[in-house]
Length: 622
Ligand code: ADP
Ligand code: ZN
Image (cartoon, rainbow, N blue to C red; front, top):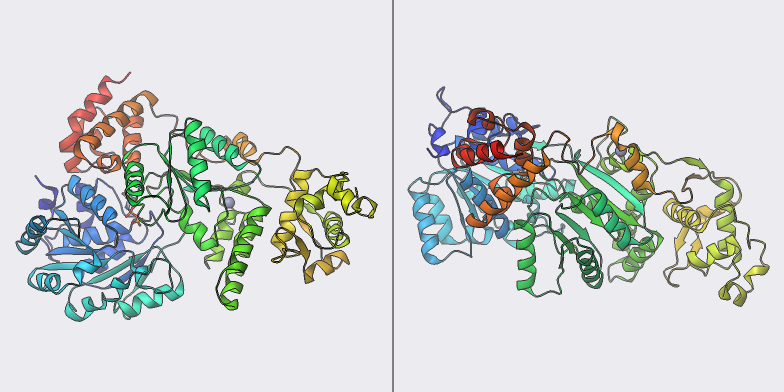
């Protein structure tokens, strides 16, 4: 029996199907998360609203369930065709009558979808905005019974955001032409300006806003000192995410290509993705990433918004993003399914210098550059903090993190030592001053440590009083001090001379001893990841672990089975069953349909379709 038949009696009578029953029957889930229930009740009752939830927060259910519970078809406006396709595939798998209208359909296919809509044979219809705005489509909707309009990725109406889509502006027509149909706007972009624009454009002035916490508790934040980034990346993947799907971000196309090649050579299958590649190659790489298990994509930020893959287990940054907003958005592509995931970044002084130069050389107005530098500084502050990264991240978005320590970031798991660094800072700042504020990190450190290099001799720096005054620290430690002084704003990269560091106004006070400096200690040979690892066991569950109770052999068998089913049906593996469902089966080894039905992600339709096979696989496993 199609699952949507379970919810036929739409409306609000006593006999109306209860949201929880549909959640269980169709989606195989046992309860709501956060504000989902409240939102769903509000929309089922015919209300408009705006929903702000982080990626992976569970926005889809907020409109999918009301569409099933209300009379008529839910119309979902979605900007991305690939995303639509996967949503429709997932819903159809669960027995929901879903379809899409977009430019990839033939005339015949489109006609058939339109007939189904008019005949009341659809629960959910995904429509591209430009399609929806055609007179033909608006007239079609006028003749159909519509349960609700869901405007997904609603921040696309904002002209100030990076994802502006002019077609979204035209969506104001929905409020005018269909005032009685509830509208629900959804986004993961929370800033005030965007929120105002959504409200204005979509006619939501009187509608409630449901704003969830932007915390992504399943993401572990980890920011390491950049030394040899490629080697560090390989070690990170091997030690913590072997066999997992992940995204690696780099700034330049050349670096994307090099990194993908180096990973592949090291036995970690990786594909490049950047705007310089042929469109066909790009879409092939994206498809493979979505459909295959355990692939890594190395990309510039051109790769992102369309990526709805729930089981991305890590996002790695080899270069510093532009801002905390960008860092949050990019790292947020990890762990949409709520499973433990890692946001890992390797960062060094050259990153700050490079980003600053890019801003200073850009064509923007001065005011814009100042804002950009402020944003970069905030991110550097996050990278240099000795405190909880999550607290800092949420604080930036105006959210207070009550617990103070999250227990799931590198600094919480392995707190860095913080010491009075006044004398050390003074030595470094004096060295910058005495050498004329014209040199970069490498030379400054040579002078501090007292290395008689060619360059030192050339400038006669071995005769300066600062030569060799910093022998108590090694090169790596001095680099860390330098970075922190830049992050604190006592040193600044000179925009004129590439890589040169100069003193700022605040450096004077440090030199005079008026301002104290606390420095995060970087002990020689100290390697944060491995230290975190050795202590991880007693502090928090390891991100990439599959749980001890899981039978690894059975897990492998189930994954292979899923890949095969996905290939045959031409859908991504996670559309067949999510990782969490597969892991649930491997852990609890259900022997009966009832036991299988208890595993999250197994709804009526999936039980009917795969139940026997899954139980047989469990029974035959070693
Ligand atoms: P978003 O669109 O907000 O990024 P999704 O709607 O795709 O997030 O949901 C993210 C993941 O969370 C999906 O794997 C979904 O199945 C799961 N999920 C959503 N709501 C619940 C719930 N109430 N219980 C369990 N899992 C849920
Ligand atoms: Zn923390």
